[in-house]
Length: 228
Image 1 (cartoon, rainbow, N blue to C red):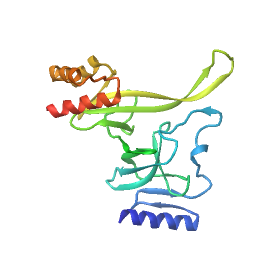
Image 2: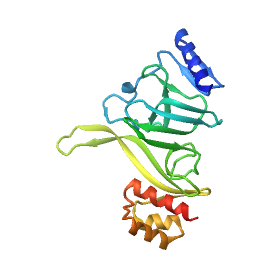
Image 3: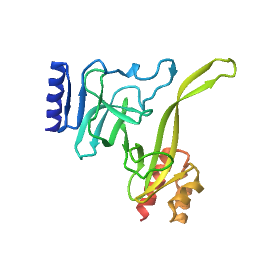
């Protein structure tokens, strides 16, 4: 029903060519000259992309008010830490209600679905509104914080400076009351988890895990949760 209402609202907006806001749907539809498409949303003369993926990707969205939307075309801007949706071609539309959680599918790979969530304790200069990728869920979570920023560099072969969008990545072990930043090495991870060290050591050895790899690190935290 929500999907039908959303489609009807979008259709009405495009037919009249105006700006509307809908509290019930929690989305802000803007069809005017202020809309920008994917290619024009980064600063001119800057190399790289501000987005998680450079094409619209299917996903689901849970708003802070609890409303859930499935099957949306999404784009995650990692410079602005902002999720937008596609309502008409390459139009970038903003949600009027805050987004709490979303999933996004890797283009061309329906089996790869990534989950992002905010509302975690403020840490390392990040606010509670910051989105983290949830690699492992449960009482103990493995979170990945990826952000992008413009960096100015001078090449070794030229005096000219270039501006590039570069990604910064941090990992955290999160419990309901704290966030612990970790390095991607065995000692740092096991120390952050706090208990079950013999079991974790044995699991790493038996399964030949390399915790520098996201998939193996995720597997270890999922195993840790199964022990409690």
